[in-house]
Image 1 (spheres, rainbow, N blue to C red):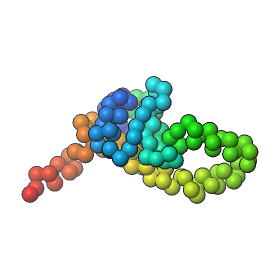
Image 2: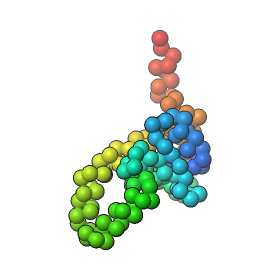
Image 3: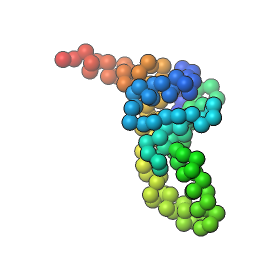
Amino acid sequence: MRVKITNPITLDELKGKMDQSLPQYHSFFRGNKVLVVQKDKKTGVIIMLGRKGIVRVNEGFPTMLGQFIFAICIVFFGVFIPFLIYIIAFRPAQRKMRNEIADFIKNSDGQVSGLFNSQNAELLDQK
């Protein structure tokens, strides 16, 4: 999924915002161009910076071992059975997490914290 942002951001800044605002997820770098956000061993999101103003957010297995096991299953069982299992068992949770992270990136664009923006600032002033 492509997420368009107005202010340029680095993966280090994005990791800091996510660690602060979303403590239920664990984030780490895979190389210097890929940020992986992990919920558990089978649910994760892979974030890559695209061209100017675009962040790519893709669902996938957060660990290299999970990706390797899936690739081995494709080699041994063919394409249809592993993809059917993937679509039924793993993809719904991964898509839900991908949408949540993409919404966080859209809402935290240019903000210090992803929880505060102009839409909910009025709610904070009310008592």
